[in-house]
Length: 213
Figure 1 (cartoon, helix red, strand yellow):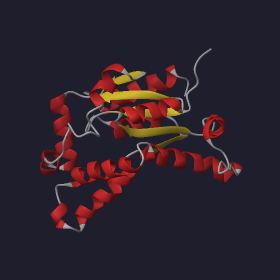
Figure 2 (cartoon, rainbow, N blue to C red):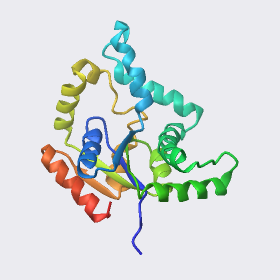
Figure 3 (cartoon, rainbow, N blue to C red):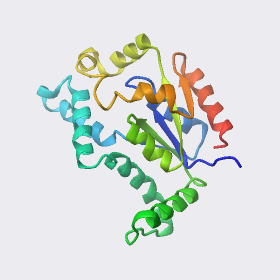
Figure 4 (cartoon, helix red, strand yellow):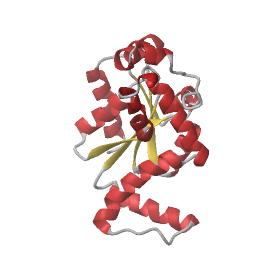
């Protein structure tokens, strides 16, 4: 029996093209919707627009915010994204998991995700850690890695974020350290993103077709 997935989670290093791949999925499937694990971190990065002392340190802000959130609960950033997905069904079907705990809660969530996958292709972008990997695999999401050669990755980061921001970013930070291992060993599919957007679109379509999304 073929495994059925509740959505797709995308893993990749800074500048690999996680968001670009997510966008290609939305262009190929009208029911696809993007959720970014780092959305809360990105919101905080906006302070650099009004406070010059943070200018060029946007990535540092994002990485530090991720640290602080995960100190509260290692799964909290993924829980936030799952909550956004869950709310779509909650509004439509009136779900209420407030009285459930443990296995009963997990079972209800999985049943609800099975309903939602027929209405929405949930694309979770921004997977970085082994904790993230285990979380979304437990929710039956297809794990897709995206990688790019180092020189192209650096060029894209500078083009997107500016040279100063890239210099102040750390690819060895704990939010990035797990990614190479995950990409090389643990993904269901891996895309090489050294080519054009059209190449990326073709790779995305191949995955959607293979797994019948």
